[in-house]
Length: 179
Image 1 (cartoon, helix red, strand yellow):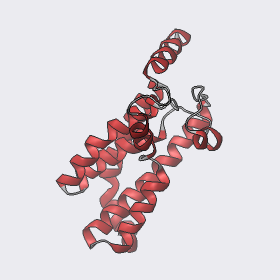
Image 2 (cartoon, one colour; image 1 turned 90 degrees about the horizontal axis):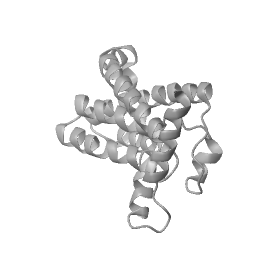
Image 3 (tube, helix red, strand yellow; image 1 turned 30 degrees about the vertical axis):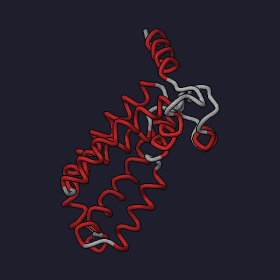
């Protein structure tokens, strides 16, 4: 049964994949990269250094949560060890992180959506909520993840995001100099 499900997953993933040069390729490439952890951590670091106290607090909470989520996803990837779909695009991901299950980008996008909506200003939260599923879909469209990688990653991100929202007051109290 698992083999059948994985076959359907691979077939659906292949049908969804954009081929290089197709209309929308560059936009999807940009969106697929927009969920990179280094991008978000660098941006949050700048906000922490230059932002108002409210933005600084949000940036620190999000950064700590992203690091926790990354360690969790990497641990699961190292246990499961599912190879990424064959393809050319995403060479950096294929060489530095050859495992695809679950999608860290999808988990990160969902975590950021939940936390931004719960802790940030409404305009920012809704902007991230609109961005997050597009990033998750772009990972499949660009061929670096299977559909199931993204679905499970997104669900994991929603769960971890909710948990981190619950832990945010404790984080602020435990290490106030960060927040």
